[in-house]
Image 1 (cartoon, rainbow, N blue to C red):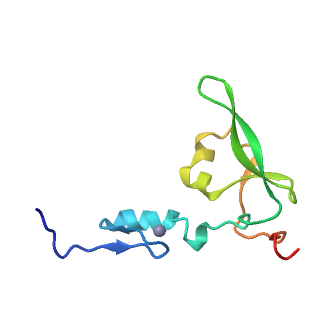
Image 2 (cartoon, protein in one colour):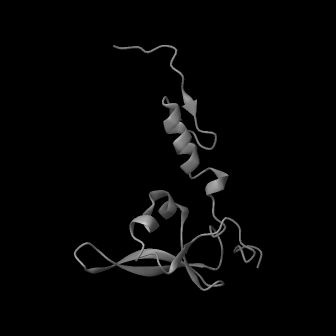
Length: 114
Ligand SMILES: [Zn+2]
């Protein structure tokens, strides 16, 4: 059995993740879903609806994925998860009519205080 003593462990400020490579943790914290910087106003909003989004795959076939639309702003929006993966840069045609979900929104309406 190998035992490593006195190893520096880095803990995420936002979730329970721990890593021993500092740079990896810095990168994780930047993209951590629990990082307040990464929360979007649309989460839990009444106006956010799921809509099908069509795209062409590499065989030029039309496929459909789950996307989001704001009924108040009448815009298609993509979540932080999509930003994190860098999909809009990778597939600009699919995202040309979509915007990233805003960090704050004056129209936010939750389901409770109607
Ligand atoms: Zn984290």
